[in-house]
Length: 91
Image 1: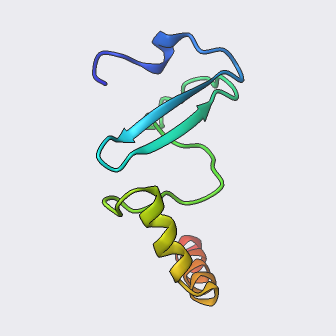
Image 2 (image 1 turned 30 degrees about the horizontal axis):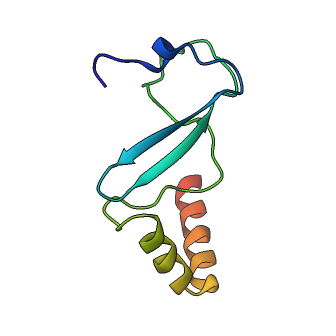
């Protein structure tokens, strides 16, 4: 990762690639290039500028283990945690 950058691959807009994050747990992410933005000198890279959901915690045992843990949590607890996080983010 210190020698190869994403720009070295010359991906085009809407082109996709698969990124495997954790070889032991098998986390695979499909990434689609949506746009090329100008570099912001104030931002630390790499950074995520969007997404639908929060990432699973480190060391949770892979995608299937994470989904099993997630599904075991009653939805009202999840809603409560989201409300608490929103309050923390507002401060």
